[in-house]
Image (cartoon, rainbow over all chains, first blue to last red; front, side):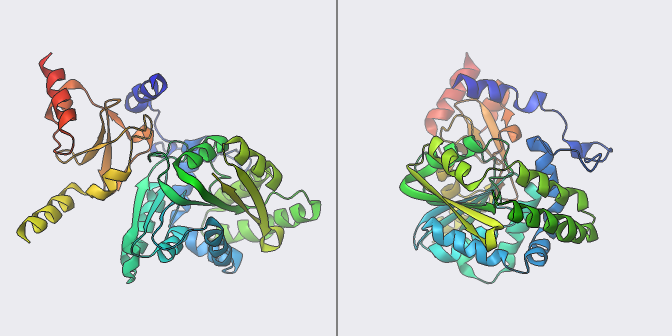
Length: 266
Length: 94
């Protein structure tokens, strides 16, 4: 509790200005590392308007398949209360909404206000009434604002790689899951196969970044290669989940080895 | 029917549903939050912090929180947790 009070004491009065409040560009050079949480938040705010279009373009629509698989693995079913962490513009939350139906509840949490605004407008522009079961929360994955054992399933789509403290996020996810329930975390796969790694890097350099450049976001998507390099392999993710308190963990490779899905049981 | 309508209007004014406030806790202390209709925010009495609600989306990143001083605590108003209101009055009168 003392730590919480100390954190609260430093909240509003001593928080440094966000990078976006200055006139200098956020990213100074191609090799600048996007290290801290604030810079990542700014990054995701910047790519928010084109995020969905680029996902479709870069994966030729296949990201929709991987996301449906992630939902399946989560075990979410009709009537469940479910959480999507790092929900972004809401792809997984909308799939969960269909899955749990009107008697279920979906909470989508993200630290990017811009991504949440897009998610919210997508929700209201759809004619599907079952999307009324979705609530959006601006929050940090390392400090989830939910009581213990709140959810029947949790999903994380392309989020675990981007958080600064992955162990803490998994500990928090474990805390808010009901015993016996699962987290399903979909992300790029950090392969131990040198050919897969080379192919992945080639794709980023010669397909992803040029496509992002069309939208003026080349620097933001160059971040991808470094962040995959700094990510964990499937085995390392399984170990991390067990360290975080999950009773079992398994990592599945999908998308021809480009993508991976961690499934862990509380 | 009229009472139900009043409840809906009240919820629309606060920008946050009671259902949502019931499933949320303070991200730092993990203690319950109470809705402050006057300031359209969620109050964590355990650590004396308020979190804003903007466009119906609660902003519960810890850095969005604002420390409530005693004057604000006595002006904030919520019908959800009477014990919290009692504590506020005691703090202001001490």
